[in-house]
Length: 145
Image 1: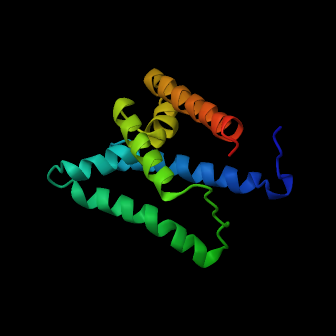
Image 2: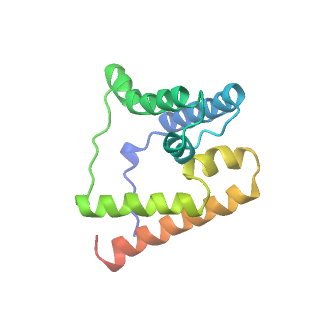
């Protein structure tokens, strides 16, 4: 049974956040000529090209600075993670391996690839969303989490 906390449902925040992500990805593509996929941006730091480091570092700093800026204007929601460090490390490693096999991450395929009508991104998005649904079901129902 699914229990939805309707009093915590915030459709306007979700719509505005989604629009900001979409506009940001479009502006990034327009001015930088690149897809705003986090795994590709991070991966480029490990094999740098001339003139490539500054914008990658700025992008990553912006990702980490954005919550701090937002916290100055609004209250951040409480974050509760029901897992230990071993589970988080394993999950992070699996996501990293998945992004290598899938030639990109959720932001690259799900946001940027789908907006460009990429069939490869559609298949990748269906795969990682489907896997996420199945694993969430298994973790919550088969293992009682």
